Length: 132
Image (cartoon, rainbow, N blue to C red; front, side, top):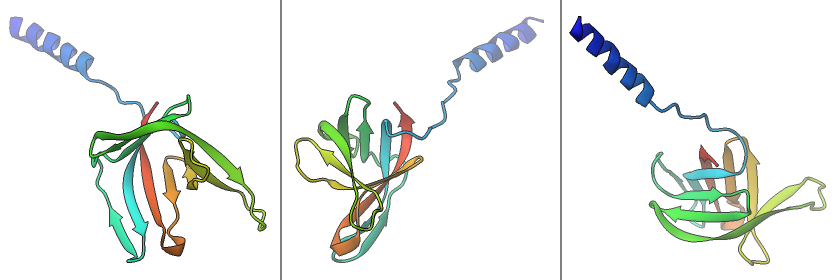
């Protein structure tokens, strides 16, 4: 009987100690990890595994942190600007810190792309890994 009670108590502790992870939801604020980089003069196409540590963290107070291999690389403020070229299709760019120009920014659900691979540029695709 003691062994049975001990097993029940141990099982309860195991269940209580398990953390339920909340699902990653759409929305800009949170952490985004690099999954793919394409473009450049050489036309490279690189994919990155989960846990690579190249992360953008966007906060609701318009601040960001950028990590490379899990180490803080830079931080500051950001804003997103919409503009309409002659084709009347809206585009957005993300502007970091006090720069006057930014990079093309595309956002869809739990994926963002920063930059563009046209004209030998580089596009970096990020997957959302954590809510804010």
